Image 1 (cartoon, rainbow over the protein chains, first blue to last red):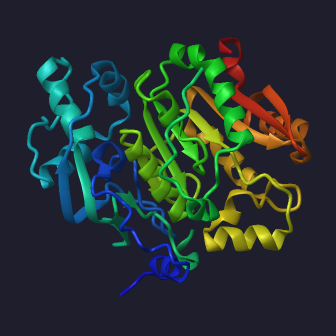
Image 2 (cartoon, rainbow over the protein chains, first blue to last red):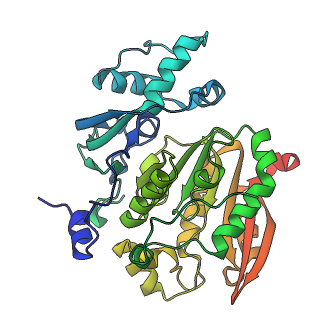
Image 3 (cartoon, each protein chain N blue to C red):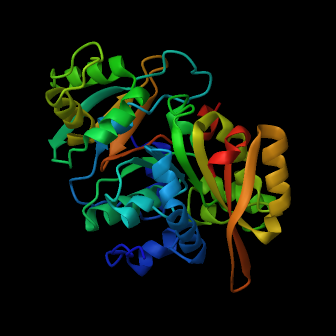
Length: 147
Length: 220
C-alpha cells in the first residue's frame, strides 16, 4: 500500500527515482539524532528501530578532532545498540575515558561508514514507521499525526 | 572565493520543482564566508540547514570538519540535494521533514550553526497553507501576509536548539520588517541580532541577520 506521501509524489510524477544512484543513505550519525515526533509521542521515542535494512559500507575521511568534538552529543547506548543490531560489535558499552586511535577508528566506522540504503525506522513507543527510500529518511507526518 | 559546486546534473524539470540557487542563497554564503574564522573559533561541529537552499557542505567541502544536516519538506528538493552531493562526491545528511521536527529533543542545545533561508515572500495566508501542505516548490517562497508565517515558527525553536556559543543566520526581506524580527528575538528569547550583510537584487532588498545569545555578545 502506498502511503500518502508516495501517492502524492506519483500524482506529481516525481516518484521516478531511477535517476538516483544506489549509494545515498542514512548514516548512524544521523540516525542517532532522529526521534519520533508523532502526535502525543513524547517518551521512549528514541532511538528509532531499523527494520528490513539494506546496508552498504563506504570509506569516509578519518578525522579524530571531529569525532572528539562530536562525542558529547552522541546518545551512546543508542549508538552501540543500533550498531550491534546491524552486526557491528566494535564499540564498548560504556564511552571510554581514554580515546585511543583504535577506539576512534571504530567510532568513525560506525558513525560515518555504515550506510542504510533502504528499510524503515520504527518508533519504539508508538510504532510509527518512518520509511527510508533512496537513502533519505522520510520523517514527514500526515496532517492528523502532527502534534 | 568559494568554488561553486557542480550543478550540471540538475535539469529545467528539476527547477520546476525545487528552488534554484539565487541571490539570497549567495548572500547567505557570503555572510558565512566572512564569518568562517569565528565559526572555527567556536569549534562549530554541528550545522543544521532548515529548508534546503544552500547545502553549505557542497561549497566548503571538507575545509573543516562538521556534521552538516539539512531538512526539507519537499521530497524532490531532498532528492536533488542528495544527487548534488553525489555529483560532487560528498555524503550529505538529508532528512525529508518539516523544519526541525525530525530531531525531537535530540538536537537540544547541540546546534552550533543554524541556517534558515525561509519562505519569506509576502503572499496570501491561503497560499502559504496550500504550499506547505502540498510540499512543493511554492513552500520555498510563500510566507503569508508579512512573509513571516513559517519564519515565526522557527524563531520559537531557536533558543532550544542552539548551543551556548551557537549562531543563527536568517535570510529576510525588507518587507518582513527586519527591526521587528530583531526586537522580537531579543525580547522574547534573549538573542542579539545584527544585520551582517544586505543587498538589493532586482526588486528584492535582502538581509542576512545573525543572532547570538545575549550573554555571548562579546564573542561576535
